[in-house]
Image 1 (tube, rainbow, N blue to C red):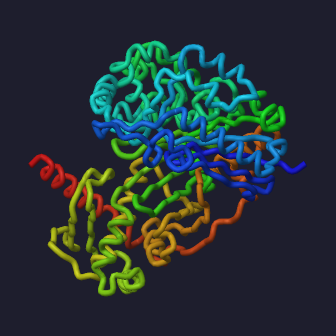
Image 2: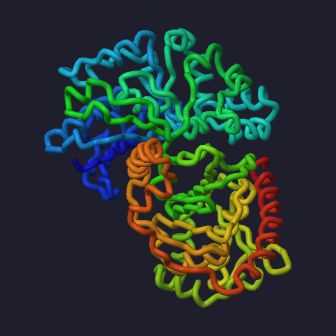
Image 3: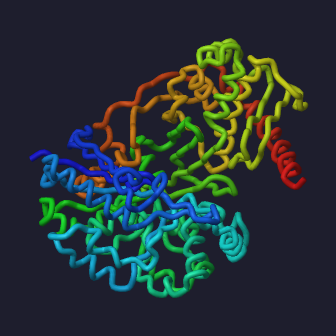
Length: 533
């Protein structure tokens, strides 16, 4: 019988499902849009923004009802659940779910005659789950950093300084503001482990990779940090349960799915993880690779072995190789900044932008630019800053210099910040590019030159959901034959090589990267002075 693997993605705006066959080809795909398909919950973009504009939540029952809908659709379409050997999934990182006392017993005794949402509607002590868009925990963040000995000390333990969206700070706020609800809470899940719990019919453990985004996990020991737990809320260890590796097989699907949908009784549930780690799997990164998404915001995923946590960026446990790590960097000033400079070109077209870029030399004759229309995350800076070859600030560049300064500057920043987090370019390093700007070969050529590595493009849509299906296949193969993730996903479609670094590029950019870092320090200082005034 053909083998299928399922991946589910509990994302912000929708629940997605992908099925792949034994050759890792997609054979089924569907989604439930929360706003459109579940209007009774009254969400906008899948969320509820509260009156303070800082608190952002999603109704936990909406996610459960979406799972009911998508499974019924699959059943109606004739999808053969008995072919599914394993399933896994992903959830938006940093969201949390609060199970009420007695909920575990309900999970373990579900009736196959009723939908999930009608049986679980009273199982939550907090019905509105805090999610990654929430920014209401500034006080809790400062408290946690102080308890850990400072922002860098916290990053050294958990991989990140305190962030308002991170789960530890959200739990601390709930304990402080809703002590009775916290007291009634039997288990706290992440969105990912909540999804796994629904399939397991029991509380699923949080995996190390998604657990790294909580400001609670010691990323080296792969255990909760008692120091961080105690700073957030009492008796938190028992409410979180143990953590497990992202590739762990947690058990088989509960009898609910066997009886209601026809799943096989040995269909394995593989630990669910966060959407960023699942994307690393979907993009099929390998050791030394870097994935760059060039979209509205630019995002980097890095596969690293020797992390150096900093006050910028995040270090997570690697979702497919337990002893390694992944780093994440996000930049607000991505494609919108590129479009703004493009609009200044004579015809305002990408063709003209590319021609101008092509007409200039790598290194831009020593001219360097910083282009931050909005306050950047990394570095924390704002404004347009231009430096000539003598490191002197200038008010403007000719258009050809401006275009190259923008593109080179964006990529030099990414390389510098990645290396600060412990990333090392190796001979086998590949850059996997996705997102809107990845279709522009001239932009990718600059990327290749700055990183001194070949650039490949990937056709992966819904990479987190697809990565979950890949992870399900990998976990089963690892158990039976010890296969690595890279060996399993060799079956998937190849990446496409687009450009390679030009001869001599490294000699040009090595000294320029050093000077860019020096200029960045000046820009950060100026931005601090602006914000203070």
